[in-house]
Each structure stands twice: as C-alpha cells, then as structure tokens.
Image (tube, each protein chain N blue to C red):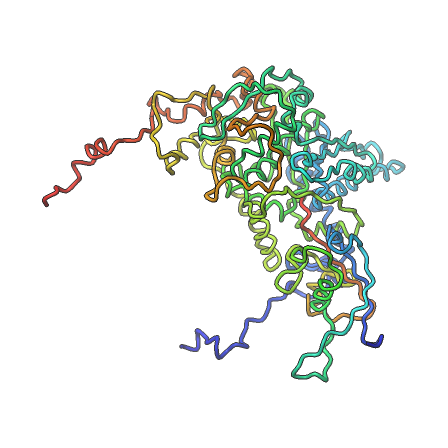
Length: 112
Length: 516
C-alpha cells in the first residue's frame, strides 16, 4: 500500500475511554483506505468516521469492545469531536476524513 | 394494501429522512457569527459562547438558593449562613462542578482584589469562607476495588483554596465517626435487624464487629443487586450530609448533571421513591438531633442540598472538561450485576439522549412539577427522607406479602420492628426479594462465620432509635405518628386474614344457591 492511500490522523480519547486503548490518550494513526465495494470495485470508497471506528476497534482497542462500539457506531454517551467540532455538525459517521484531521472520543459515562 | 399504509416489501427505499440534530444553520445561535462547535439540544454554540453559557447556567441554578431566604430573580448580595461542601466522586459531573465553583467563587475574587468600583474587594468578598470537597471511598465495601483517595486528593489539589475531606463508606457503621459528626456520644450497644422477614425485627447486638465487617455483613444480606446499589447511594448521601453538618456547611452541592438527574428521578420512582421526588432535585436537610425549626435560623443549621448542574447535560460536561483540559479521576462502579434498576435506567436514558436529547430534559422538567400526594409523617430512620403516612398499610393492602395469616397476638411495636420507621423505598430495598432468588455471589464479599439473618444497623439509625422521642422529630410530628398507621378518627383498623367459613358468612347473602 502506498502512502497516498493512507490518511494520517490524530486520534485522542478522554473521559476514561483511554483505559480501553492502552491507557494512552493520544494516538497517531495511519488509516488505510477502506476496501472497495464489489459492484463498483474500480471506484474508491472514501474513509469516513464509521470506517475509523471499526478500524480502531480492530487495531487499537485492547479490551471490552462493547464499551466503545454498539450497533456499528460509537456507544451512546460518547461525544465525538472532529477538529474540535461536534460530529453532529459534520454528518456524524458519514464525515469523510481528511489528511491531518483530529478526532476525539470522550466518554460521558463516568458518573456525577 | 392501501397506498397510505405503504408496503415495506415494495417501498424498501422509502425510509423517512433522518432529522438533522440541529434546528437552524451551523452558525452559533448566540453570537450569530462564529461557526458552531457543539450542538446542545438542537441549538448550535461556538466554543467562545459555550463557556459563558455553562457558567451562566451553573450560577443561575445555584445563586438563587445561596441566601437562607431564596432571593428570586432580583440580584442581591450572596450571604450563606455557613461554608460550602462539594460532593466529589471523581466522576465527570463533580469534576466539572468543582472547576466551576473554583472558577466562579474562588478564582475571580483573587483576580479582582486590585481593582476599584464594582470590582472593589469590599464588593468581592468570598461568598463562602471555606470550600471543602468531600470524597466517599467505597473501595473497602468490595474486594478488588482500588483505593483512590490519593488520586482524588491530587485531583482536588489542583484547586487552591479547596480543602479535601476524605470519608470511607464503612464510617457509616463506625460509632466513633458518629460521635465526631454529631457531637453526641454513640449508644453503648449496637442494634441488629433481621432481614429474613418483612417486619425487620430489631434486636440488641452482642457482636463487637469492626465497621468494615459490619458493612460487609449488611451488604451481603441485601436481597438484590439493585438493593446493594441503592444502599451504597444512600450511605454516601448520609455520610455527605453529616460531613456537611460537621464542617458547618450550609450548602452541599453535587455534580448531578441534567442527564444524571433524569436517570436518578426515573430510577428513584421505580424503586418506590415517588414520595420524595422533590428531594431528588433539591433538599433542605436538618440533622434529626438538632434544635427544632421554630428556633432561629442560625441555631437550626440546616444543610441545603443543591445540584447546580441540573440544567447542563452530560455532553456539555464532557465538552467543558475536554476544552478546559480537566483530568477525570473517574468514578468507580459498584461491582454488582449490570441488571440493576439504576444501570438499566442509565442505559435507557443515555440511549434516549443520543437520538432525542430534548426528551431527557423534558423528564427532569416534568418531574420537577410533581408534588407528592398525602402528608409526610416522620423521616425514615435509614435514609432520613420524608416518609409517607400509612405507607406500610398501603403496601399490605395492595399485595399479598405472606401466605400465612399474621398472628394478632404478636402485634409488633416500633420498639421491636423497624418497618414502621422506614420509608416505603427503604423497606422495599431491605425486604423485597428478587423472583430469581438471592443476590448473586459475584460481589465477592468475604463471608465470616456461619450465616445469620441478623445484620447491623448504620450508626445514625442506631442513634435515632436510641434517642429520646423529643429529639427525634425536627418536623414537629410525634415519632409514633408513623406507627399508628391504621388509626384514624379514633378508630383502630386491623388487617386480618379470614377463614373460608368466615368469608362464606360475609358474602353468603350474595351467593347463588347450589341448586339454582
């Protein structure tokens, strides 16, 4: 795989989620391109946050996947920021990632 | 099938378009200039406007309740009658709360001391002379939990001017702790209760168990994981209240966010706490041994429990903590089954908030309008919340609690039974068994000695039971009021199971003849 097919991202975890990811808050991630879908194999599928979530689960998550992912997306109670902006303003999981993006996952489930 | 109903087999693509998570554009609704950074219940805010918004909501929820007499919308000088105690769990809400308290009432005073006019030191005296953060460590209740007092001490230590007050959960069973916070000698003998029957019979305790073993014994005998969860919350609440009283605090603030408040309300109601719904949001607590409320306000020394984050959701708390780089020490979970009412309610409300954020706010705002029906009797000797009169009678009336008829000759007096002195919720917590059997052994609490149905009572309950009647009642009710549940208008009512023959005699006039 060439470098042009890889997206370099900064991924951070907060609110206790870092405990699931090797107890490291900040990660530099080289995200590969997602596999193309069969009907149109020549057309490249852009990497979006949904793909990143699954990639993180398969490659960085160390324990208890159910605390991070649920029904194909992040578990309710996890706030996602894309370049310091709520992902709800950016199309949530369908936001197409860009080179150098900073994605933050913060758990809000650590009680009062 | 008609067109109006639609045919899912044919119209598989005709799905309803997803509603946007924000109402208008992506520009901040406040400054109307900057691009938005956060969506809060369909409204978009930029990072610059978010900070003042949260500070303003925090102060708006807290400041009208600082003075002894609520000040209403008009701004007056803030003069609390005592100090401030922050209930600090290390979780997200209490971390944000402590940061807001420090930012609003400690930091600003230091920043303004060299200025004049409105910023003159005379006009910027500290609202609270002393601010303390109390942390209740529950690690000793369950084997394998990490003691985090030092971690939390470090988290509180980030804030100048905040004193750290650690308390341990087993203090609830420690007569020495009770003497320290109440200023009165603890009763010489402890009391045990029997959780094997619904009367919760009281007996003198002959054991000289340590506070930790008493705590383990108490938790081990609780009938369900929900009861363990609920009991830990009650013990923490009472420990915080008496610590607030002992530190001359007039206010106890807790980091219950809007989301947590909605969870607490639904969970409390589903566990039989409907009568104390107002107290889940805000509470004016008097120690049971203090002077009556007819005396002066200073002599009364009540503790006002406020939740200043009640208009701020978990999402906003997370954003505040992230953008202000607040380290979250983390709140330890009670290691019991995930199937407790609290956990199931939390999963439901957090899931609801993801797709319908305004609905969670609606829960809290709707419940805030509810008022309990009926008079409050005495306060519960366990949780110290108001009890509903005749709660036990009502409970006996609506459900079959036993297959055997009660023996009238063994009518229990409050001296031998705890049931009449408990609120409906605490009685249910102590006695309502799961249909699936006893509590699973996963809590892993050590078992010492042969099994016994007797469990020790918390220190305050022992003291209340041993105290003379005139000091039991700050509300002016006789302590025996709640025990005379069946007595109304001079009549004494008694629940009694009838034999089949007695029943036949009673309804005989209405029965059809066998040969008809």
